[in-house]
Image 1 (cartoon, helix red, strand yellow):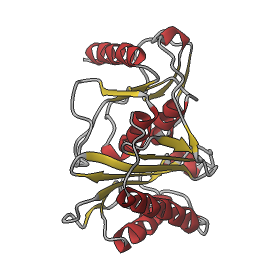
Image 2 (tube, helix red, strand yellow):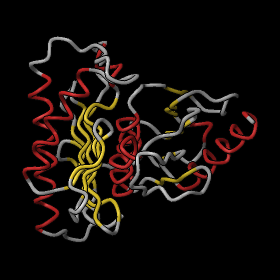
Image 3 (cartoon, helix red, strand yellow):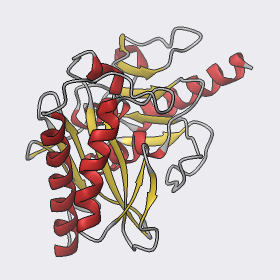
Image 4 (cartoon, rainbow, N blue to C red):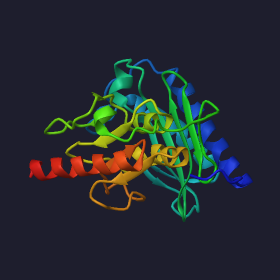
Length: 259
C-alpha cells in the first residue's frame, strides 16, 4: 500500500468511472422488468441496460472497455476499463440489496483506478494505485485478523469441508465481498466455485484491497492481472498475509479433494 500523491490523469479517470457508475444507477431507475433477458444464459435485462449506460460514458471519455456483457470496445486505447455493470444480477433481480457496478481501469502496468458501488445502498469504494482506498470518502483498512478460527469468511461457491472459520457468509456479489475485506467488514474472501472468477468479478475489488492494505492472491499461483474474459482465476483476499496463506492452502486442499 502506498499513499504517495497520485496524478491528475488518475483523478480524471476516477471521475469517468464515477460518472459511469452514476449513469448505471440512473438507467436502472427507469427499469421495470429486472428478469432474464433471453439473450444468453444468466443474462438479465438489468445487465444489458447497465452495460449500455456505462459504456456510453466510458466511450465518450475516449477510454477502452472490456465488459462482461458485450466484450471489447476501443482496443487501441491505452487505458481499458474492465466493466461488470451489475455484479450480483440475481440479487438485483430479487431486490436483495447486495449488488454492484464494478469498474477497474487498467493501464500497461495493471490495475490503475477502481470504483465499486453498491447500487442498492449507494456505498462507494474507490482506489487509485499508489493513492490508498476509501469507502464513501473515508480511508479504509482491513481488520487485521490473522487466524481462520477467528475469521468471518465470505465464499463464492461452497467448500467440500469446514474451513475452521468463526462464521461464514455467501452473499452473491464477489466485488462487494472483496471490498468488504478491504474495509474490515469481512476478514476473508475465498472463491470455491467450480468455475472460477473472471477479471470483471475481482479486479476492482482487488485494487481496493491492495490499496487498503489487505492481502490478495491466486490459489493456484497464477497472475491475477488478466485482460481476457476467457481466463479465470481462483481469487483469495484476506485481512493479513498470514490469513491469506492459510486460506490459500485450504482452497488448494479443496481443489485436490474435488478431483
